[in-house]
Image (cartoon, rainbow, N blue to C red; front, side):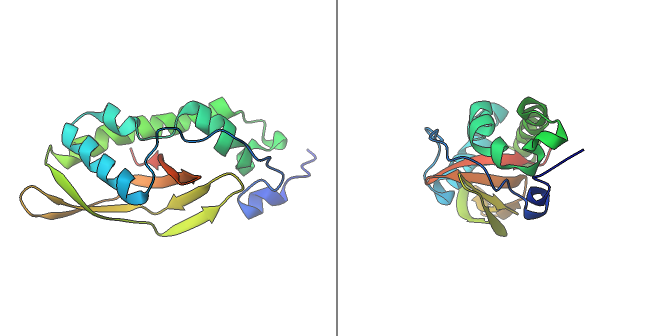
Length: 162
């Protein structure tokens, strides 16, 4: 099949993505604020607390999906196909992370990112490690967050290991 956008696959982003206006409303305003909110969510023992820090379907559909190479017409994929998979990772990752945290109280030490990919409407920070001290004084490193999406100074969890 003809795929005039095949170079987008090599680049890792769509070159003709349009600018959008929607924002990550109510999302944390820094890595540290997101990290502290993740620590609080782990303490709560409730996976839905982590899910509330994660990307919403409308944000994925409007902001992120149009910039991913998989959104090219030649692939035949739709945003909701990709969202089902992404939501499954977010949901499963939330449950696993809360279980792994064992109900301790955590104080954020740092949020580390390995790399950042620039897109027109957002940045994708990958290779995330969250370091925190638990209520017993033990340093813990968590790497269940695969990626964080940033848009106009607001941050959402984009993907988690499940």
